[in-house]
Amino acid sequence: MMTPGTGPFRLPRVNTGALAVWRRNALVWRKLIGPSLFINFGEPFVYLLGLGFGLGRFIGEIGGMPYFTFLASGLVASSAMNTASFEGTYSVHTRMVPQRTYEAMLATPLAVDDIVAGEMLWCATKGLLSSTAIFIVALLLGAVADARAALAVPVFFLIALCFSAPALVVSAVSPSYDFFSYYFTLVITPMFIFCGVFYPVTTLPDMVQTAVEALPLTHAIALVRPLIAGEPLTEPALHVAVLLGYAAIGYYAAVVLVRRRLIV
Amino acid sequence: MVHGLDLDVPAVGCFGLLGPNGAGKTTTLRMILGQSPPSAGTLEVFGLPMPAASREIRARVGVVPQTDNLDPDFTVLENLRVYAGYFRLGGPALRGRMESLLDLVDLQDRADTPINDLSGGMRRRLSIARALINSPEMLVLDEPTTGLDPQVRHMIWARLRELKRHGTTLLLTTHYMEEAERLCDELVIMDHGAIVIQGSPQALIRRHVEPEVIEVHADPDEVRHILGRHAAPRIEAVGESVYCYTRDARRLTSALEQHGDISYLHRPANLEDVFLKLTGRELRE
Image (cartoon, rainbow over all chains, first blue to last red):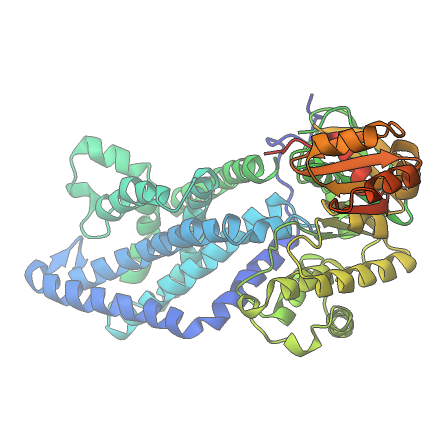
């Protein structure tokens, strides 16, 4: 018989210990800051210059804006997704399994609740950094409409937070690194292709559109693109709620699953 | 897996959990640390309920795990600082605390060495220093000297005795009976997830085995033949080795002396003899 309030399904209780977990990751990141920033800035340059200018010449305008702006705003959002997803799978698995970092943390006052929260905050921070890098590149290349676009920056954090949660769920149940290929092939890549990074979702068949509307990246782009292009936001509260919803439900699921994996 | 464990660890001294592989030692430690939920029963640490009060309890405990889990992304000093952060320790006092801990385990010259450049013995010493960062009331050690050379083992034993003298409760598991005899004031021998026996090492030796042992390295049948006419000691044969447990070794040794080609060792009984008597000699896992 499990005492009430002590089983793996009990509600998480986070405290400031989560910040110690975040800080640990930030300290490791600081050691590799050179290569990290190089990748953060280098990759979007290639994408934006290659695809934006190359394709942009043929496409011209799309969705009422220059293709370069359309693509840049899509890549800014998807970069938060990709970065948070990688950090939440490969890096988290490294800390959870081979490095036994969580085992060490669980010998201290930290609980799984804090570890998962700290990791999500860290994934969100990394997503924020990578999206902001692309945002700066897009700004330098003239794709950003006006100063209101700065409001997109906190949204990057929210997007990455949203995607960190399912990534941690996948990490918690994944037996090895190989398993993550399924997640990226079946979940992340389809979102990258179908959720409006490269073309408006309205061009998709109705049924597909309905399905795509339930995916978080669609809502992420619906927030970021108008902010960057200087257009009015439609239903911002809904989009924020969807992103927060994925984050919250994913957090709870990840906490339960990591407890089941580590507290045995 | 453990079942029906009834254990009362005294707040002073060193308490040992002994047992063959799979006896449930590590599971017991994990439950005490709130890393393993007991399916039934109650568990209190410092009078607080576990796992309900696991955060408060773990703030007052230090843990040296069986397999090192130092953070490979950091240096020696960074490991201490980051780990201290998990206890919300920081500030100028921490600096001094870290220095004195590195002195304690003789790693003061290694503060900036990355973990991957440390030897196994250095890692274990750092694990001990790390476990002490929060000045714990109880230090939990899971096989602290397994795989270490004699120099490091003796150094660690000396440090653990020092901690004990200064009032830290030690709770350790070990396979080394010598280690348990040297460190433990009280111990339990576990097997198949349950406690077989509890007591001080000396009391257990006194109570459970004959005081003297003669180890003979010869054909068991021949030894039995030679000793058969004398006192009837308890004899255990393992391959070409024969262990004779007795209260009167003199008659046996004089019998053996008459066969000059047989070599033997006469020694007092130790904890290993108790352990093997109670848990048997068959191999585990």
